[in-house]
Image 1 (tube, rainbow, N blue to C red):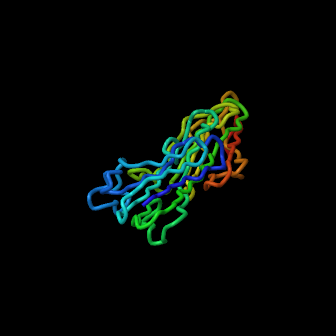
Image 2: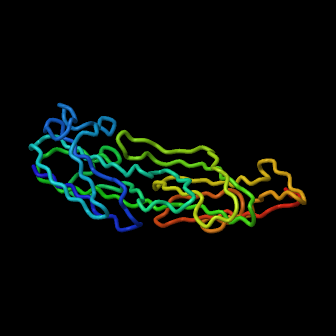
Image 3: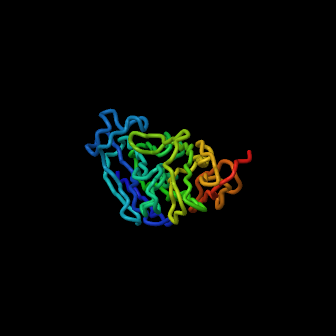
Length: 260
């Protein structure tokens, strides 16, 4: 039986060089070590040994492999790991290698062959052509618009669906505080790549929040509002979109008493 696995090119975003691939598992074929009983029952039973269909640069990948007829075969999607559902504190633009997330399967299979997200299992009963479809994850960038040299931090709360790696993992942050950023910085101070279905909450921590007492001589940073993909004061709640999202925290230097 001839199995053809295709990974179509991603046409959105930039760079698109982060790794994503499809593993082809067939237990007793000598292709992989899925086990004598055949293909694994779920992602937890997958090993990294096996035939891999890796995409090439930003183009498509087409992989063909012969599998003895009537063996069980499993296709397992892996998503790019390098910046996946992660964050950066580089003080510069996000890297060009934007990661990918798995979308769905296409081709010659039945709905019941989909065991779980990114995991497809079927019998090698005929020649088949299967597509593993991925899409680019767009970044969320955070800027600071400061009126002077005061500093602010961000409280980050984020969660994401399970990353399709082997073994699978889940990303999350619960109220982590970033480093302090001062002055007017042209580049993003924080950036995030988050899967579809993720949530991201940003809260500004200014000098007044950390106990700074303004006086005639001492100015303290005071958060004013968000601009960009968030507006107004308070927290900024974002969900990933099929475009770049950018938010800016606008601050001022307060030399008087804070009015709550």
